[in-house]
Image 1 (cartoon, rainbow, N blue to C red):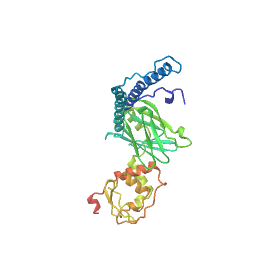
Image 2 (cartoon, rainbow, N blue to C red):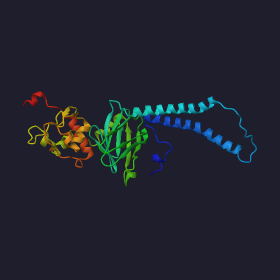
Image 3 (cartoon, one colour):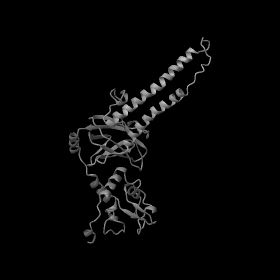
Image 4 (cartoon, helix red, strand yellow):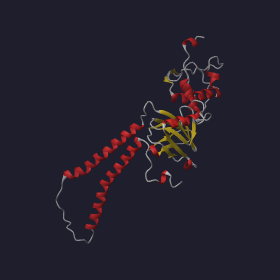
Length: 321
């Protein structure tokens, strides 16, 4: 840890409007807390000294009672703190609803590193480059234990859970390089599970993408995995194994062997790949698909699902050939 490390600063830098508003909320609530508690402690100290044992003081009851004062000292602090509850709830709801034009970056936590993948295919380990002025949605999952991605500069953190996606979104408005951490104890080397996030001007970000050694796009990489794991050998037309076609499957309705009808969304595809048990068997087919749980890494599973989401249904003219 260096003298310039964020943890040694009185207050970390804020690089988004939400982060700035969060700071204002915390500071305002701190001031309110002091205004409500400091007078009480001062009064306690004064009365403890003024009416201490052996002191000369008139201790006879004054006989003065005011219901208005009693109600006021309870109701006014309650209403003031309720303002901050509504303020905080509004920020929370805002943080859970990314705009539709948000750029989606995949984030995978594993002991003890963070892997990020950009929409155009570039991957980073423990470093993350992002443009300012663009809503960013981090789509987060863990490949092993529970982690938590914490970005102090945007005042946001979210749990990274095994087998479940969580989201975090923000829009940075200031360039610079800042720390990112895992804020959930996750094992022996938890303390070294961190990195840096660099916020760049949009032009600089595009230049970085160009020179960052772009990998295959997610869909193309997913197609390669689709073939490498042998999916094409069963699900492509003309296969010797009778398995349903995956073309156009995403978003469609699937009739199951037990009579239910489900929508083939992302969560269903994920569970079907990892645990293709009887309650997900398509009507008219036998259960012959093996489980890929423990065989396919989380990042590769994500790319495979991206391919299935983009796999178009065959055109009617092609289907009759």
